[in-house]
Length: 410
Ligand code: ASP
Ligand code: MG
Image 1: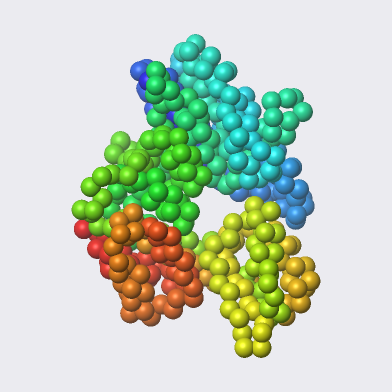
Image 2 (image 1 turned 120 degrees about the vertical axis):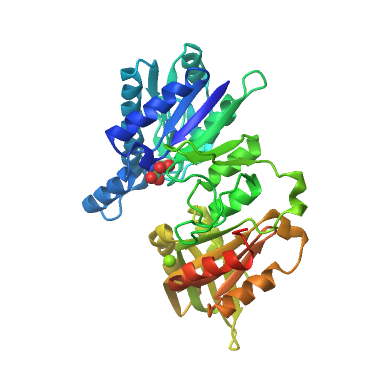
């Protein structure tokens, strides 16, 4: 039996916490081959980013990768030392040593393949392998560049390793440990009677993760789905059951079709206004953003009476500088009258596989928000999700009223 365990930054924030994790890992290693993926200690990654910005307000992405990857290298070495101190045979790897080969895209690289040769050798030799999360390398030569997988990317490291190590003879599961007990119907800090879910499907979890539930990296969920890796999300210190992310359950129809409420305040809206209306404008804008790996969400285009168009879309707040570098010159070139940035917005979503086949959820959602005096700025949907963009200050009220409307506390 093989298991990949991942411990988040808050679980390895101090030497004491690293010791606690080491004890749990050592116990698990008695009856399984264990790979441990760690995040950087506490807020290390944020601190490194702040440090870089003190030196250079617009640091080069390649150098950011090298800097940020060091955080996980520290925590993986320290956890390995703690394991060795308990008499547990262990070795630490960088992402590169773990065989994680990525594309050449600094700060947001995707994994191309995992070469598990050395990992398997060490596991078979009876060692616990501690891998620095969130990083890889562009190819398997000494001249390759270090890459990182995007913020929160250690989850992706863990699921990718579990997928690569999984085989018929030696099945591998993935366990994600952090300071949350599992996946809830809504953020329990906002909705005190939110319920912990026993299971959730990959599809639902992907929507939750993408729409702001800060439990797991969405790319990790996607990988789990594609490679069919069951993922347990649980607390790193408490021995209580967590949530299992797995394939859709058959009795879905019997359940409340709305599974959870997600919200995200780290979004901003960019409006490009007064563009002379011509074919291909939206294509031009979104192609340029996609080329820079900026994901665009809610998109609205209006054509005004005098033949000019406004296009608005939302992006992650972290992508603001990169997006404006593209949008400002493009807007000028197209003869747009202005570019307006609004950070005072947030997204709230209702998510659930059962919504696909039953009508009425949109109407209930919009009505509930209206009764709460919350104005909807724009809307997007997928087959299993409805998302509204609203004023950021109203986000907690929105989450609470929707949780109640769809009776998720029951
Ligand atoms: N340390 C990285 C971050 O803070 C990666 C991770 O924690 O998963 O984003
Ligand atoms: Mg915001």
